[in-house]
Image (tube, helix red, strand yellow):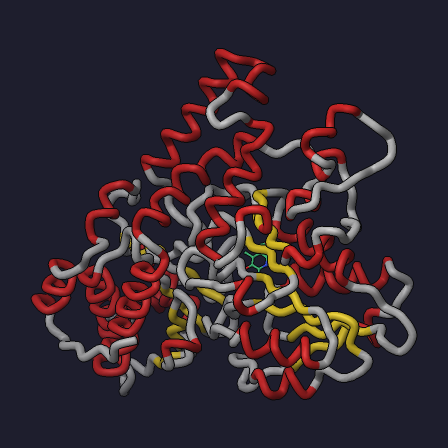
Length: 430
Ligand SMILES: *Cc1c(COP(=O)(O)O)cnc(C)c1O
């Protein structure tokens, strides 16, 4: 990966946009008017491609009724597998190893229950204290439902400065008591990207299965699940995949486990050709599709057809390259314009390319009120306590000029002390 050398001026930012091979994709997204939208790591924007695929599915429902299950294009009956095959190309997996199904937290329950097989002294799940809380809630409840004690059997790797995890330290915790490791790919607050390949290798050397929550990385960081030999992974579709609010999520199951019985069985996980025999003995599909539970939510899967098509067209490597350039430019501008008195912004994201995902944590003790002041100026970023303004310039629809503008706004917010007008109380949905 090239090391970037930047300049500070507005002209220079515009020049980067002119040279940007992905610039043309912005026209396919609905960017809210008078807004700089850098919150695509929480909810990606709608594209005209997704709008078309949703309208097509609505029309199929309108005109075909139940016949849509086989006569829609593609047939709804195979839609989850089709979307899985498209997404598989983003994560270095075979088509059969990925399926669009369920929602992230439910998929954690389903996959962790499948891979967590406590026996003898091996009873513990190893996770970390910086992961997104829903992952911890789910892990605790799995451990409890399996008759174990979450206080004893869920162990959390601790962090440095509440920001970073250390792979070597996590590895040291992979002891003989650990039955399963479950970790995030990118930390939702600091944006640190963990070394999935190294962690997988270390876990396997100790005979421990390992899974990852890649909600914060799929669509912006290339993954090579097969090459890395990851056992399973889950991720949501509404962040960098632009699949729409609460859209259908994804699971990856390494083909080595296709024979394993899914812990949460349901009729859509049945062997496809025989599902409608409606036999009461369950026989799971020998693919990730076996981990489906219910009828696929066709309407909340439909946007993915359009949005995955765009990502595949742009290419995940080109997306990653631009993402790193955008975030490096942001880091450079914050460092050179905003790090000293009276601005005092700092970067809470690792600077090495291979250690960061798609967003930058810009830290400030007044982060919450500054984030509100930015929103009032039409800049949609978000705030995560205690002091992190998360800024995610999205390669498919943000520009270098927008990154430049954001840093100018950060500067004037402090110069004019505007942020002091905003209450110190956090809003319900930051
Ligand atoms: C976004 C995200 C989720 C979201 O869970 P839902 O069940 O889709 O609400 C879970 N885990 C991580 C790490 C996330 O980033």
